[in-house]
Image (cartoon, rainbow, N blue to C red; front, side, top):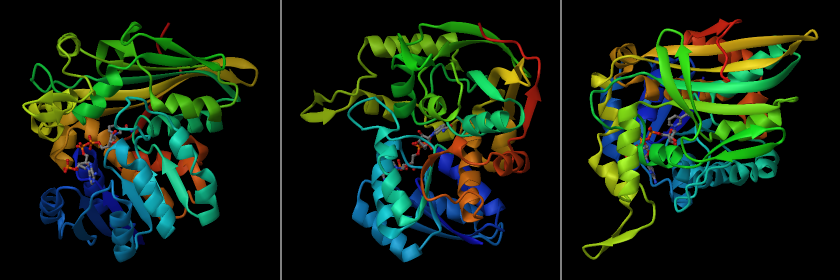
Length: 400
Ligand code: NDP
């Protein structure tokens, strides 16, 4: 059916690439382009010949718009799937605009020197993408991503009005290390050491990092401590779900993770302010990333499950209603299938599906859109087909 250019070749990209190759009916040809070409070549070698998808590789610096434009003009993809880091979102969007190519990503733009992620920078491209007749699909991972699709699905099929959404992200995986992050450590630590916030009655309520704690009994996992975090899909869902009164996001963390994080913060290792070290400027958090285990290496060691989903409360036919949609994913099953743990898997599968929605024409809508602004039904079907089946409960435990 078409061609997809995948930028980045880390944990999430590796899963998305496996899935594109499995889905050769849609992905005739893919190009894997990243900063370290040897990683792209190793993946090509592993996957070549496992399906009819043709695989090419290239080296690209995604901070450089001209390099990206040259690559896109050479390969002429139907869609660019951005699985590099949030810092590259705008340069890749610029290159897509210049070449009139559709765009998909999984995380919103964040300037490298300020740990502040929000959609305003990418939403500013709305008019230009519309004029160019191309679609940008923002946030096609799990959270953001599937959580937005779940919200659109609940609104379409289960509710007349959704008033409350609690997004619960539980990773009960155990990798055996005292401290490691399940995806890019720099992005992960920037996210969890920031202030928390939630949306209530039309405005943001800010909390201190990890200030709000709850215990939740997750289906197929059991009781876990979870903490309120700021998360990017809250910003778009607050605009796109009519009648919404409150949206909160909770993520589980174990005691060992939090104790290590606190110590690292206390000694300044999570800072993004450059310091002078032996005549060279280094960013402590980037140095920390270099000494922590590579998330891609956690796959074989991680056992247990993830459970990510949304609890909705609202009204149907004048009556109060509660509805919980979630996915449970097993780290070892993911590893057996694609050689990665479940955190990369639960992001890489929706990334492939987002690209597929655009390549098959199901989600073509010139402009820049968040995932909940599209028809959720074909995406929900694809989740069941491509490895992230969802489950529902009409009587879930609620979060107070
Ligand atoms: P990794 O660090 O494993 O991979 C990032 C990849 O991007 C690496 O291959 C890296 O190259 C490449 N890269 C970085 N900078 C550049 C550049 N300037 N030019 C070209 N390539 C570059 O990260 P993850 O796979 O864990 O995460 C990928 C994305 O997914 C992130 O944006 C993250 O925020 C997002 N994410 C989204 C989630 C969701 O649910 N929505 C959940 C988890 C992650 P190199 O190999 O040389 O370092």
